[in-house]
Image (cartoon, rainbow, N blue to C red; front, side):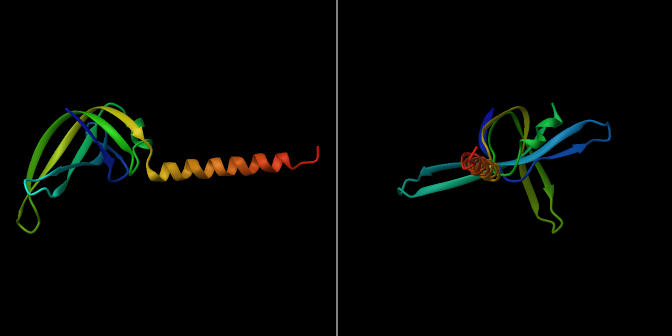
Length: 128
């Protein structure tokens, strides 16, 4: 199964009791459609994701990054502290494809390009 969505938080690496590393992150997917009355309905689905293949991807998985994930979905159910039943979706990721940087990365890149342009202009103003 494939899903495309944006990370809702920065990824974290956790080490299990068997000394295996897993990267945990969360992704939100959006879907919109029109109901019978013609109203536009927006639906967001949240997935808790895990990636066991390499912990090195943690630096690339930052909040807001658009990713395409391949893997399998599982559900989990539990009882909250207040006694109410809860449920969630887990996505066991086997492949990650980055489709775009987060807003934070775009800002960093834009800042770096601006600084580079300023530096180049300063060099052009030198009399020699």
